[in-house]
Length: 320
Image 1 (cartoon, one colour):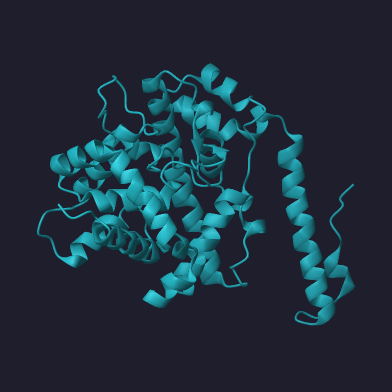
Image 2: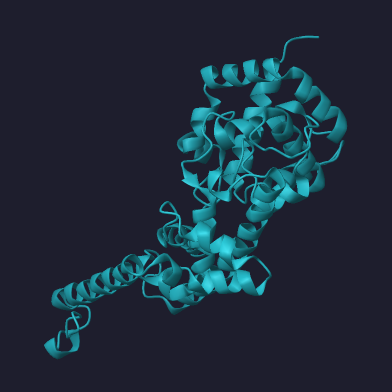
């Protein structure tokens, strides 16, 4: 028996209080229905489209099936919903970023004197690594340190999720209907809905590629992918690289035979290598410098925060 209320039989007028209540009730029941279907299905059912896609790409199905059967790997469509909602808002409600925006944002906590002093001590403790990275890639040590501070508080916070489950959940959400009930910024707009559907498809394909890169990264390190913590969107390590960037720009700076983004040496050199790979050059313009940092995180506010932290670190640099 269907549990969905027969809203149409009530003949409520669209836009009226009763109509809005009925519409909200219908949306709530639809969301609960989707959640129930996901929760009651076994892992082999929930993840079947993803398992089949990976198998078609030559990834061992038995091995991935064992990973998806792990109790800690749970499908969470709210991750993609949060990302798509943010993309919709940025697209249709753009905000001009100013210095005042930085001072009012959460990034402001990285600019207080105590935090800057802590970053300065971190640089002093790892001076040889920062100096060698700057010489090798031409990226100022203060910029690298600023990124590590903003990304993971200098390695003290590495994320509280398994990167595997995050990326798998996002990859599965290329199916827009898994995301639609959770979105808050559509506002009954066909343009917003069309944009959101395409965004879910694009980010789902992106997450699928990152999931495969995570499997490759874990294989190279000879560890289980489930042992790798990540951010809300699957970034890993002290430097918060997406797995594909770990493969492209990761540096084995300590020469131990593998890239370990959870080790200071590899993380520091990898950040510098990434920025150089995205256009950082000596004598470049301010616009080019900002573009290189923007590639790390597509947020103008992020770029402003990193550069502001770097400037403060330069200002407290001991006189030579």
